[in-house]
Structures are given as structure tokens and as C-alpha cells.
Amino acid sequence: MKIIKEPNVMSKLQTTLKANLQCSLLIALCFFWTSTGYLSWMYQLLDFAKSSSVDCLTEVIGYFFQAFGIFMFSIFIKRKRNLLSNKSIFITCIGIDFICIILATLSNHLVYILIWGYLMNFVHGIIAGFYLTFLAMQVEKKYRCIVFGGAYAASSIASWLISILNQSNFLHSKYALIAYGILICSTIGLILTKNEFGSLENMTFTEENISAGTIALAGVTIVLISLTRGIGFYFPMADISSGISLEFSRAFYAIGLIIAGIIGDRSRKYGTVSCIAALFFPFAMIALSSEIGISIVFWILGYLFFGFLAVFRVILFSDIARTKENFLYVAGFGLMFGRIGDAAGNLTGIILKDKLIPLVTVSSICFVATFIVFFLLYNRLYMPVPEPLPSQEERLNAFIQKYELSLRETEVFNLIREGATNGEISARLFISENTVKFHVRNILKKTGCANRTELITALNRFE
Image (tube, rainbow, N blue to C red):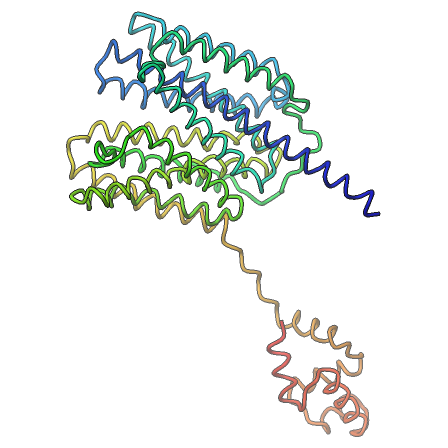
């Protein structure tokens, strides 16, 4: 039996590992060229608009278009789930995205840059909807965090490396389009080589009891967390210009993503609570703004913990999507709500950037609201529901069954519970006192009790 079984176990492990690596690579490639394409679009806008305006155009309106793209994808998937298994639709969306990146980065008129850029962001949202749904469908829960966190970490480092080419001007050059073309062709090649693509066959769902109210609470939680984090980036000292290179923020963020992936898969509870810690760091840095060395440490820790936040908001809805087949369409909602919160946080930060007291006040209010809503969600998802205590009748029946009391012994035992003496039991059951004593001795022997008092105590403590 052992010789037959081991190859099957190894084969299953190899299949799982292959599926996880393919999904991780797909996410990494998609995020790599969509995020760097977004940066190329930002650089193009900087040639035609002020940096303050570009922040609003990209990190507020652009993010809303990404969220809208995920939302529209989810609506289509809810109505026509078979679209997931159609490779040509995903490949067509990727092709449209590449065209939008080209036009958005080559246009020489602000209006056209914005039109093609917002269409690009919308399609970016659709692409994200695809790969996040595949994450929920194809990766087991115990590997989901590290598959996603590892993919985002790899693409984060890769996007930083490509951005520093040509004296940090590579993403603002036409050569970037060649790199995007290669990456997109690699993505399409990976899609074409995948055997099972978006298939619901052999999928199992956890069938957990997740209500619409819980989904809504999860969405509000992610919006508030992302909003509070976004405002925190506009705090003084949120980005340190001395003592450490800003480019290395991606390295710390990548490390945080990997750590979050490992911890999240070991325990969703620990991974979830860790992400709320990311919101403390802007406050800590402003309190310690005069201590540059300590501020640098908090700055590094902040980026590490942002990895937990990024993993949490995606994995939360990936887990929900896998509970029931008709919830599969919400797999991308984590990033969708995250982008809405990011946009709202950036807008608030832009408006209050030079007004420290209002900025800290609004951020503090958002933080308190986030903390309350977060732990309401935490209690719903991760706190075990206490089982109702058994009734007195249920406890009595279980006690009788455990100690295998006979019918007559049960009658005697019930009268003992009422406090009846041997004589009273004899009269009520129409048996002699010697027979009563015989049954009482048997009951005490079976239950291991020395006397009637111990017997009643044993019943009351019985669970």
C-alpha cells in the first residue's frame, strides 16, 4: 500500500506547487507591467502639468478608474462566470491595455494623455480582477498569502530595478514600451500554456457562513484602512529625504510582503492584526520628528508593515470568494475597496498637506473609526462562536448514556436528584428498600461516586 500511495502524494504536491508558481508568476508579470506602465503615464503627465495637479489626476482619479475597472469585471463575472475560462477575452484585455499604455505615454497633448491614461487605468482594473479571481480559484487557502505576497514583492523589486535604468529615466523613454511588449508577450505565453484556465471543475468551497453584512463590513474596513494609510503619507517625515535612500522603500515593502505572506498563511488572525499596526507609524514619526535616527527606524518598520496591509486587503476577499461559488465575483473587491480608500486618502492629504493640525485631526478620527470597524470585522471572522451550553435535560440524558444506567437505575437516580430517601423511593416505585439500596450502590459504582452528594455534584459539573 505504501509503494502505491507515495507517488500519488508526490504527484499531488508537484501539481499544487506548479499551480501556485504559475499563479504567482501571472500575478507578478501583470502587476509588473501595469504598475510600471502607470508610472510611465505619470512621467508623461509631468511634462504637461504641475506635480500637485499630477498627484490628483493620477493618485485620485486614476485610482478611481482602476476601482471602476475591477467593479465592472466583477459584474460581468457574476452574470457570466464562463468568461473566466475564455483565454481569448483575457488576452484581448491585455492587448487593449498595451495599446492604451502606448498611446498614453506617446501622446503630446494633455487631453489625449488623460483620456488614454484613464482608459489604461480602467483596463488595469480588469486585469487585476482576472488575476485576483484566479488567485482565489486556483490557490489553496494555506498558500494564498505567500503566493500573492511573493508575487507582489518580486514585481515591486523588479519595477524599482527597471526604474533606475538610464539614470532613472528609463520609464520616461520609448525603450520602456519595448520592455512592456516583452513582458506582455511573456504574460500571454504563460496564459496559453496553462491547461486549466478559470475552470470551476474539481473546485471545492469552504461553505462558511458569510453574510452580505459581513462582506459590506469588510469593504468599509478596507476603505478606512487604506484611507488612514493614505493620509499618513502626507504627514511630516512620512518620507525621509536624509539618512536613507527613498528608492529602498520598495525593498522594505517587498520584505514586508513576504513576511506577511508567511505569517498570513500560518495564521490569518496574526496577519490581520499586524496590518493595523501600519497605521501607527505616521503618528510615531511625527512625535519623534526631532530624532532622525529613530524616525528612520520607524520609517523602515512602516514600509515593512505596509506589506501586511497590502496582503490583508486582497486575501480577505479571496478567502470570502472561496466560501461559496456565487461569491466568486467578489475576489477582486479587496483591491477595489483599497483603491477607493487610497484615492480618498490621497485627496484628503493633498487638500490638507500644509495644514498640520487639521491633517492630524482628520487622520486621528479616521484611525479611531478604522480601529472600531476593524475589530467588529475581526470578531465576526476570527473569534470562535461559543457553543450554547447544554440544557439540564440534555446534560441528564448525556450523563445517563455515558454511565449506561438501566431503566430502573434511571428512575432511582431521578428520585435521588429530587432528594428522596430510600423509603420514599421504595414507596413511589413499589419496590423494597433492599432493592433500592442495590440500585443506589450500582449507580454509585458506575459513576465512581462515594455518596449521593458526590453524585449530584458530578451531574452538575457534567458537560
